[in-house]
Image (cartoon, rainbow, N blue to C red):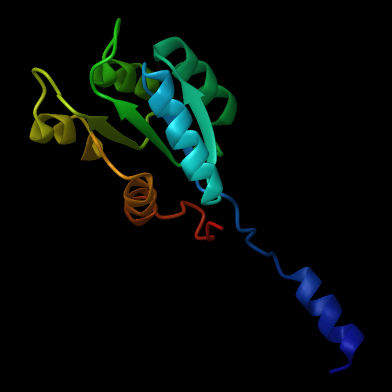
Length: 147
């Protein structure tokens, strides 16, 4: 097979493009949102930040095909994390979520998992540990790879 034939054959095959792992961070603490954004972007993640329900719904609506997981605080002013997850799932049943909390209040880790959380990350945490955990828990839906 000539070089031109090989090139034509390889370009005819569909390729699966690697894309960044996408995370929507939902937390009312601005400092924590910025810390997670900086740390995860340094590791090659695509990151969107929301302070609460309205922003989370808008960002997920706009970027649902790029967001692999929502990393959300359990306790926030207004609607808490489980309530925001329920609102997200009304429009996007496939939403994958990991909760984070230093104090889950009336919620238990088992109860949060029953609501569909993949896991609960305890605060304080290291960004490296969270980044590794998320990529282990959430495989690419399209069979591709993250970069």
